[in-house]
Image (cartoon, rainbow, N blue to C red):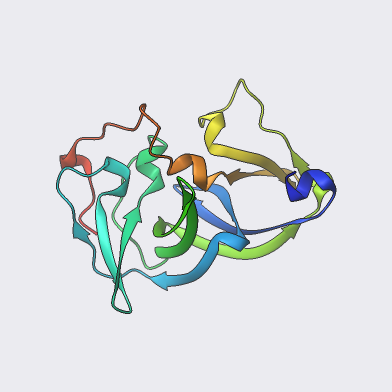
Amino acid sequence: MTAWKSGAPLEVLTLGLQGEVFALEAAHVREILDLIPVTGVPNSQPFVGGLINVRGKVLPLADLRLKFGMELRPPTIDTRIVVTEVMIDGDPVIVGIRADKVYEITQVAASDLEETPRIGMRWRPEYIRCIAKRGAEFIVVLDLERIFSRGDARDDAAAPSQRSAA
């Protein structure tokens, strides 16, 4: 049973992607880095098109804006890399996720978490774990395991020329 469905609060890291607020479960987050050099990988999945070196370890770098069909923009002074651990096909995998901005780690009460509506969503509902209410705004809590699932045949098909160099 999901922790928040059992009444426990959910601790999340909030981040910005193109002006939208998303959240990752804090339990998945390992560290937050300033933007570092990215090496492009030819013929890779469009949204995981680069590699980064984090203290001698090579990690894939994902840009969720591509997964969500958002416009690519150059990095800014606020751009960060959120290093996460995700279970992929039963194995833990360390992945960097590029964020336009990282806001905070916060707890959301179970009473402020809702199931993802199946219609009317801008984002594919299978990529969303739940919706968190915070005051008058909603925060989309992402399901990283589903986003990085290798079985997703409907992956984004952004042309390599649309990718950002950094």
